[in-house]
Structures are given as C-alpha cells and as structure tokens.
Length: 460
Image 1 (cartoon, one colour):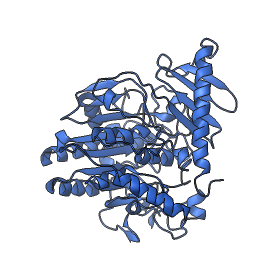
Image 2 (cartoon, rainbow, N blue to C red):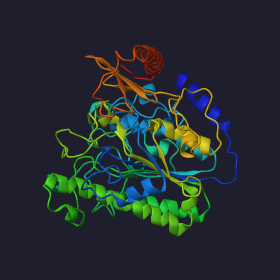
Image 3 (cartoon, one colour):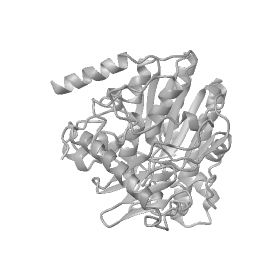
Image 4 (cartoon, one colour):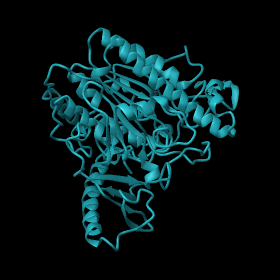
C-alpha cells in the first residue's frame, strides 16, 4: 500500500509540471566508462587522440572541475537520472540498488512534456532480466534479480538498446578469452528481447548505430528527444580494433588497446555531431559528455588510464577518482566558455529542467543545481557545495567553490582545491574556521542523505 501511495504522489507531481516556451531543445547525454580526467587530448594527454572531444571543448563549454557523483559506475549513472546523490536512493555500489519506482526520473518528466526518450549502451541501474545467471552478475543483482529488476522500458524510456553492465570494447558479444564462447552480457531492446544482429567490431559504433536512427526519426517527426548514450569504453575488457591501434603501434599492447578504444569512441562522437548537422538540428541540440568515474587501476584493467596528475583513481574520492572529463555543446544557445566552478553529474537533472523552464518537483530533495547561469556566463562561483559518500558512507567529501574537505577512517583533511588540485597540502590548521564550518555543513547533509537511504526498501 505504501508503494502505491508513493507512486501516486509521483504521478501527481508530474501532472503538475508543464513545459513553457515553444522551442524545445533536444538533449543528448553521453558518458564513457572509467575514462580518467587526463584521458583526452584537450586535457593534455601526450599521445591519446580525441579530436572530436577536443573540438567540443573548443567550440562549447569546457568544465575544468567536473565531478562524477561517485567514484564508480552505477551510483554516478543514477545521479544523472535523478539529480540526487546516489546514497539517497540506494545505488551505493556497482550492482547494488536500482532506480526505485518512487524516484522521479528525467525521462518521466520529459515524456510528460512531449519528449521521446531513448537509452543506448550501458544501463547498470538494475537488472534487465529476472532470470538468475542470465548476465554477468554479482552482489545483489546475482542474489535477487527479481527484486532489482529495473529495465529502462519500465522507467519511461521509449526505445533502448542496453546491456546490464560491461562488455568487451571490441566484438562485445564474444568472450575475449575464448572466441568460441559468448561473453554473457546481452543487448536488450525490450522485455525478454535480445539483439542478435550487427554486434561485431567496435562497441561504440554498435551503440551509435542504434542511437542515430532514433535521433533521425525524432527529427523527421519534429519530436524533441532525450538520447542517453552510455559507452562501455574504456572499461575492461579493453580491446582495440587494428585500425584504431595503428596510430599507437609503437606503444606496448595495453596502451595500444586502451587508446585505440577511446579514439574509436571519439570517432563516434564526431559521427553523432555530423548527423545532427545533416538533420539540421545541431543548433537546437545540447550534447553533454563526461565519464562515470576516474581511470581504473583494478586488476582486470590495463591500468594505463590517466588522472592527469590528480591523486587517486576509480573507487577513490581523491580528485583522481571523481574529477572527470566534462564538456557540453549547444551551438544555437551557448558560446565557447571555460567553467572553473565545481560541477557534478547530479546537476544534469536541474540544468535540463531549468533550460526547459520546468520547475523542480517541490517534494524532493535535490543535490544538484542548475548550471545554466554558469554555461551562459552569468555566474562563476558555485554557492551550493557538492557532497560525496564512499565505501558504505565511511568516507565523505564536501566540495565548496574553493575548498575540499575529505574525511576517511584514518584522517580529516582540508585542501585548497583551486590552488592544489593534486591534494598535496593539508590546510586544516591554516584555516580552522573554514574547516569547522565545512565539517558542520557536511555532517548536516550526510544525516539527511542517510535518512533517505534508510527509507529505501531492502537496505541493510
């Protein structure tokens, strides 16, 4: 009964939201998987070729301090759909939690306002099948796939082509350790419907082959759209095609494969932009791009990803684990700009609604804030701090415009993150008043987040 009442409240909220203004922009959210802050040409990588991302950074908005909402995949992805810190709704780790039916998603609000919605590539916010062992599951997904069944078609996504989690970056359905075996993570397009065609070669191209027809149909029918395009690149298994390895042939194989799959993904981003130009909708389409966390240094990865001199990597809430590449382009609306203020994936939701003049639901706590004043150049300083929780909330971070408070079981440190992005100098003793205030603010925020977490079903 409680779940029914909550669902009714969500529907009531959505019914009260209406879109103002005639010209509605198209929205594309692109995301890579485990790409470090330093894994782009525009952020200074000495070898990696990413001309399409470099051009976006030049022609659009380049965020120098863009953060994933978590130090790993699933939680960050949930923040994009909800505008909330992932601990509020129970996605606290990979394959743990789901987009609960009580969460108001960006797809739900946009559909209510006449948009068509599509999701392509990685999903990772719940199971796609209730069949035990159907995918490469572990954790809660393995033990209770029915409880965590949460496919995009049940979250107001009109069209999808999605995997539950990772696949090889080349020949995504083939196990790279045994070419005679399938990898075990299928592409789904609906309940019980798995794709079997056009699944060879570069996985980013396979994904874009499905996203572009959706975009074309939407443009031809003059229907505004949201297209979520979440690449698996460069998450392990990392494999680069021969064509894309060629520019890196003088490097050791791990670098060849890693850089090759990123260059192949970058090619697809260029392909996307070319298609928007061809369809005549580029000026009225905003494209966002970021990574879901920092570079992986885990055993199964090549461990050659770059955090660009930042401390830490994936799973760490030092800068290298959560500061990621971030760019945005909207040619008809936004001029080239560099934004130095801290921004986060939780900001997508309120920013999109602000751009469409849609009010945020009043009965929900949002951790993100609209970036529209930043990307239009009206504002340069962020007032709303960004909070992070990690490792079952045993680690916490509070990032304000200038300072970063980092609390672990072992220590509490304060960094002037503007002047010291590598987190080398603890300035807690130098700025005790700043330290005290940030601890107070973080504690208050953390209490509210964990209270919301306690209300999520099946939380331990």
